[in-house]
Length: 281
Picture 1 (cartoon, rainbow, N blue to C red):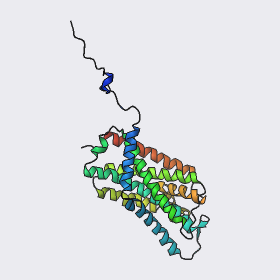
Picture 2: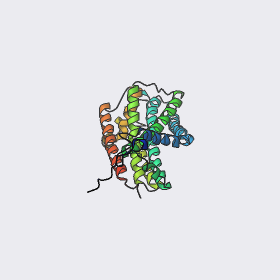
Picture 3: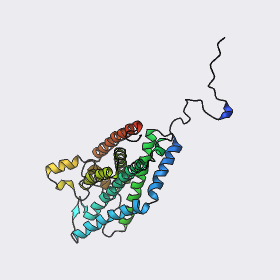
Picture 4: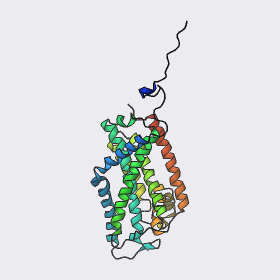
């Protein structure tokens, strides 16, 4: 007589799931929230460096250009130059810090060997990515709000908002775009020099040459065409139009362009995190 195979049924009083069955079904909200809070607390512990210092640096740009113009009553897109410049500086500070937050988070964890503490918990690749991006977006908006609050008191600068929804939409999309680029950089980089190279040769040139300090209609045809291919231009133009009510390019085209890039970068980051490329020893 053959013995029956051992049963895998788990006694209810044991409180344990049957082997092979997932304990967490769907989204791990607790884990996602925990990692997000870890990301926020990580940069908030050194807020003088991660929030206030970037805000002061951005204000210095405004001060320098305002003083350089002196008493010249120059207008761009129908508004005083200082009021044209201010929104671009706000989102420039936001996106640069979104990139710095996500890239440094992964890179520091890799260098210190603590990346295993992130990979071992029951978090999917999508949940990991969402937490990193949400933390970077939070830092971006904190920097943006700090700069905005200071600009309200800045003499000769108007930062009244014409379309709050447009400001929120382009600001968030820009922060997501740069945080995803930061995740890619953090995954790829093996040392801080690699991340610095991306910052110096990709992020800063694209932000500085994106129409932050000038209107692109003053550029030569070829250079203007190059500027129109720069996604940072659409971010800054759309964000600025939420303040002054005037955009240089079609806002819907900008939304589609930036939104499409976000989808592509999200998919790429998800695949790399899922495979553990350059993350797992």
